[in-house]
Length: 265
Image (tube, rainbow, N blue to C red):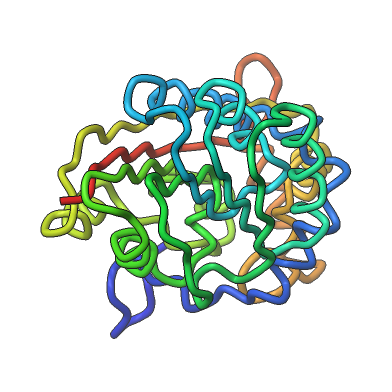
């Protein structure tokens, strides 16, 4: 799905931040048991930081969700101070509780805000897992990270690429605009030394359309741009899903994780 005419690459003009806050707040109790892909993404991003992030650093995490990445970094890197940001107060509460259980020696600061429009504290590292796609502009994230980081600081992001939820996008014509690796290269070019840029494709399988949609709702993705589907569109979507059913009998849902690790110039 291409961005509307006149919109720069990486722009998501359809994002409704109030809706995003609501849907992730509603999923705060179901997220961890359903976000299998997101948990793997957080673990991989934490591993990428193992040799790059010094202990006792100051870390800002943007869009911490339930704290999957936060808790891993607090255990492995023992930061002196960890800023946890999320747009959802309910998600933030879960993350703070998880992080307190993981690392009593870390000074944790909760920042409930839409990070795209709020000030960012100074930090040695800015990290984010499975969140930046909800920004209106990925370029804004990179610019704000550069402004927050000290020289030599690390920006480590796991977001999603253009093949994310490709089945949904193909059948409905709806979906977020996911920036490409080339977009990220362009955004970081004059501000960062790009150390790593990698993509994956992970496909989950579901027995029914209802199970697929329940999975999406349980991980906070319970609304498509342009509003809910009407009965006719929903029926056509279900019929289209059936045409995609694989030889093993499951309906596919593709995730396309994109990892960026860069050092502030």
